[in-house]
Length: 160
Image (cartoon, rainbow, N blue to C red; front, side, top):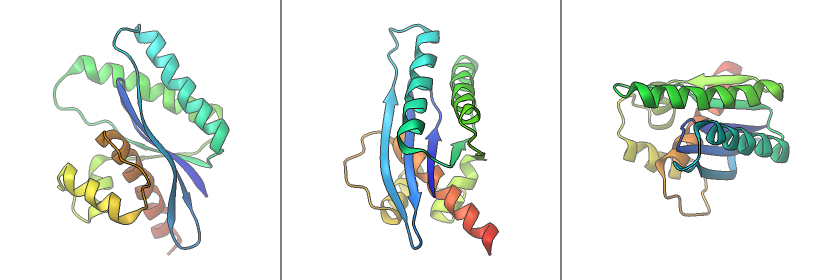
């Protein structure tokens, strides 16, 4: 089974394509997709949608795993990220992909076993759980991979 996993953002979007083989998860692709602050809001949303659409066309995933939003303060950022997330969900619906949404707590528990894990602990466990053949510079990319791993952990627990 191949899935697309996303850590939603507006300036930076973590995206991962993972495959579940019989015995393990394989990272097929990951990136931190960036939009430019010099572009209009609408162009940035279009760029995000186009990137997601292109990856869906290329890898043909069977589902989308996406992190739910959690913000404490900045309402302006919440709105922009929410709109970007809407574009991502639109692309999933357009391609008939079932969507699994996970809270940051669920992702931390699935990856580290502890819901209050620090970001560094999540990153370290992702590195232990799946082979990554490149240097990742932004935690958004690790967050997307973690969302994908959470998806596979959740379907494994349903099958038991």
